[in-house]
Length: 212
Length: 236
Image (cartoon, rainbow over all chains, first blue to last red; front, side, top):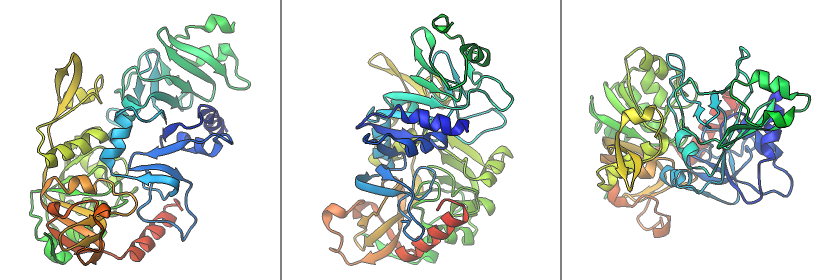
């Protein structure tokens, strides 16, 4: 339910002609909701630009996969390349937007998504490069963890993936932008009140008086 | 110049306690026949250099070397797909050396291209700062990482000729970069073709980098293997 809402909300950030890299999970699902008439060029860090949907059974190509090693198709006009070229696109500032999941985000736009000391030790993969290099960074995640704790912090407590890089946070409760003054509430999810969001958010919402 | 050898002969080029690069990306585009042969050989105490672990769930491709406990060090960007490998890392059986993915790839590129280091801003403000030396260039802070090379690189391409020229199909992943950064380069291919059959503009890795060619599975066989794997893991 909230998962679908987040995926659909992400899709509103797509602009015609954008080169976009989508993280695994909800961000990838947002590709199903790209508005009609908007052309978005999807990039995958293992080396593909303009990839399309999953193939049908019997039509998969062992040499076409996404960054999760899942089968994909290439669209007309698409291209494939090695991983050094792929990260030149990512780190070199050629990708317009990335949408990623996170464990925590804070008021200064820092993100923690790759490590929980003693628990999650998988490595950072391409996340640090994506967050550093993409022109616009959108974090999409549930507002709270499974214990109901805010994932939007004053300051991230987990090891950072990147410091001060986030432009927009999309959750199942609200949308925030990050500016010089910190966290700005931009939008409430349907049926959610501003006081509920204040209660569920550890970070300080700079413009909350506008929502009173 | 490349010499065609069997997978059994090729695996003898890899010696215990040495560093081996494996091309591919989380199980896709990996040299399947050579990995089976390395697993069969039981060569121990390998340092594996690979962008990630094997296919999700473990036990497949590089995951076979993990199950056999043939690895003592893993140089990579991500091991999240193989729970067996994570267990060995947590248990102290395997040492892990991490770098961000783009940095990992550039370290290998530097190793192959004769460069002294990779200097990158990625990882500034994170724990990665502790993995590298900090340097200032034009007033801006960067992290300096050392190049990576291996004794042997085992890579995967679509076609190869006896000059060592390789043609890729679909995603070439890490193979073209690893082809430059090892003392011995073994390329597993779907097809071995006559010199001249790969037109110059279709050569993805020039033969100068390649030492040995190994006949892998045919394309059709690989297609069947991946279809089965993807269906079994609910990805197709």
